[in-house]
Length: 149
Image (cartoon, rainbow, N blue to C red; front, side):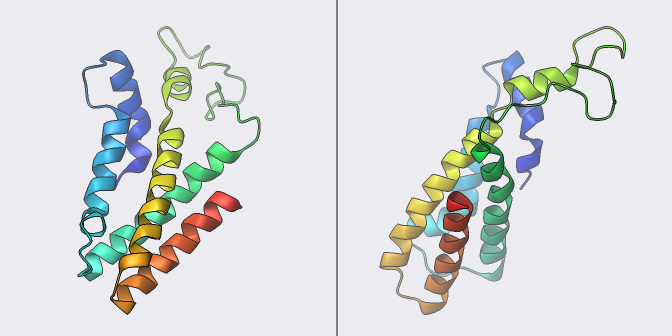
């Protein structure tokens, strides 16, 4: 699950709006990771549980980024001390500026955190397996903590 690769995907989608979008990518990951849960299948194996835990952990960084009050994306190359917008490194479009201004992955993932919270609420109420319910309760508590902290 490479949620961290979406800035490059955002750039390619910006250049060609008919290509695979970051939102489609996020939806595909969500559908894949949570397929059994969405279907109400309580027979989660170790891989399903591990992948769901990783998904929830990856949400944290994006939720934190979106929740920052007055968040302003840096338009500066972090590898250079004085390079503003990537200028001073030669000619052409500065990649750091494009990626920082068009990538809205954090906002998309925040949406999926809210969507997941709702799914987990529904499954906690309907799941009969104590082990699966405990897994969902733990993930729900983590998502809730991320959203409320």
